[in-house]
Length: 132
View: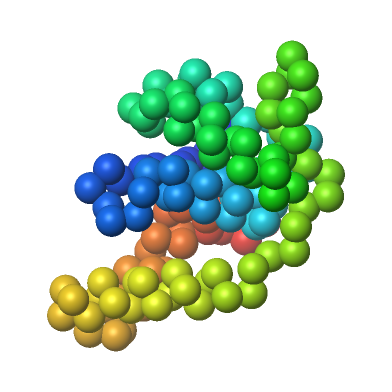
């Protein structure tokens, strides 16, 4: 991914690695962190960096292409597509529900959960969460 753009997978998560990676890349594109025309890492490189099978990354790229997020640019690799699908309105609510469930399971008070989310946005957002 571009400089400062990070994807992570958690093999211990109940969410399959494939789905973790697909969701993260789609979100990076939707947010503009990966702009139109940006080159994605090669399948081999991303698989090696994440310690996952090349077939998993290939499947992610294939599904992202099928859904209109990316396109193959031949020998130039995979790039973010010009026309992207409309964002899924329920995706953020679903993610918030998952975060809330984890906070409840860990008995984390609401204000502490909000603070943790704010810190994560600061760490992981474009430019470290700083406004441009």
